[in-house]
Image (cartoon, rainbow, N blue to C red; front, side):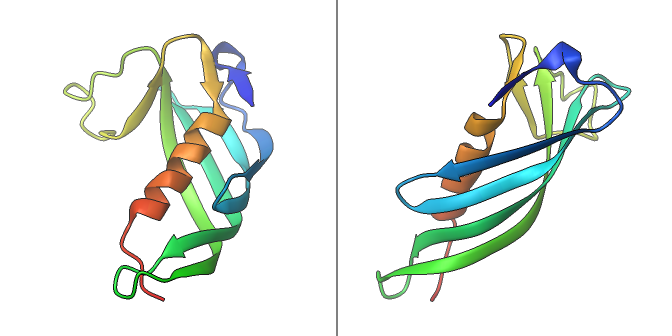
Length: 117
């Protein structure tokens, strides 16, 4: 799901996205809103199930997910040296915010984290 960045305003815009991958079945829903500094805030909740590998035993296991995620996105370059309050900003350069790409990347990051059954 791609949303044109210039159409996002300070009024929250709702979204819901179902993601199905080899190791997860997740629903992401939340709001997009533009902040006064030009960043777009993604305030969301992800729910569903993911497969993980136990880092101690090496066994696969499923885990229910219900996490709040807040991300910041910028259409163009974000100068983190001038804006020290926001270090972790996802940058896009084509005028569109690709929510599917963002949330699939979050799922991959979660799977690469340390997990114990």
